[in-house]
Length: 320
Image (cartoon, rainbow, N blue to C red):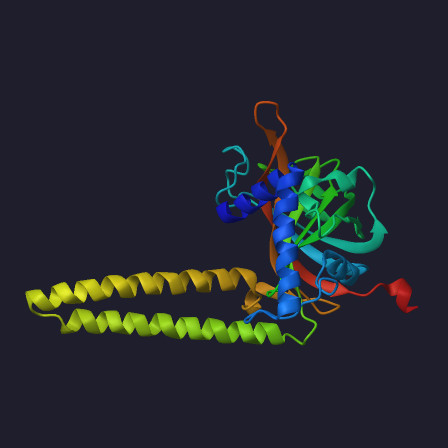
């Protein structure tokens, strides 16, 4: 969560400083132009139109999904210590549709969902399709949910990864034991990927991952051989120098492996294939917004649970 929290904080701070946002966006845009025009080795000629925010938003529009929400304390949350301290969870199923309608103007000002200057900041409307419920000591309770907005932002050209964020309003909140979903705007943060070429880019990424894992395994074997083959003082001294180099190389490979697993949908257990050639991260984070700083204007987002994509379904009205 600390890693994700850093990403969120940086995104929000960039959105409040237009010149910084433009600078980052400009570097990103120039790289796309160079990769397409000059065919830089190791890159692919991705069209800025094919992999822009508009491209992913057009695929998301009218998708209907069932989300399973689990509200409760998660490791590293900045919520007060007494909040959900028992470890209990509040769970319910929520059905939503990511519509093709623009969201209300007030919703479009949400900094967390805004894209960078060059990629655009179009936000669309997301609507609840059911009345979610859960069982508490008071019996069956209905959770009131109002429409919100969703948006995407391109995170990686080669990986075709997008930050996928949306929010819904919960005017009455919900409570079960010491777990309380606040009566306010609730934010959902996840990732998704485009797979236009039948997932060929994922296959290439898996090959690179396998090569990295083989390199790590080989270095580990080399380290074991050095340790076993060093008996005398001089041999141990020489082996120590070689082992330092090997350990550093292995650490670099492990870092590369970690970055690949974050950027690409490589583990089938952690993803779900949705409509329109979109892959979704199976699980995302749920957060609330809090204001900090001297003037109370700095936005922070505190985890209050997780959600997962459980199923996708068609609009019955369109099928009739």
